[in-house]
Length: 120
Image 1 (cartoon, rainbow, N blue to C red):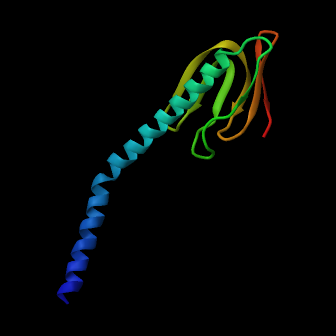
Image 2 (cartoon, one colour; image 1 turned 90 degrees about the vertical axis):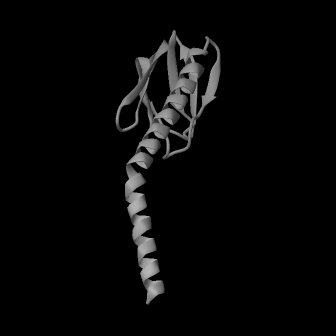
Image 3 (cartoon, one colour; image 1 turned 180 degrees about the vertical axis):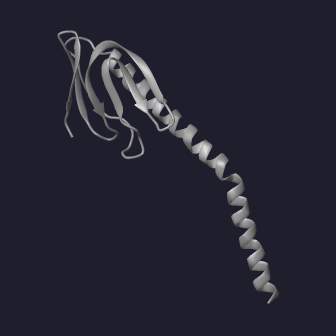
């Protein structure tokens, strides 16, 4: 009977500990996701800003479904991660479209504007 009581105390302690640290773990996950989105968005922005006439690039980022979609439009790239939005300016005018993680895109300049075609 005492071993049963020991297991009960152990399990109750484990549950109490998880309830105690759960808010901190949730915050860490949210910050990690925002950081990942920021890095992906910055990398895509740098690739698009580096385009020049006659250059085509194959573009992919992240792993679906763990990465949030990147929204293009006007002179901005943005990524919404649940509690906010990360936004970066673009050197070139962008089409209104969404890029998703792990998808493949062909990107080029045409008439001074970025063109995007999904290839896979």
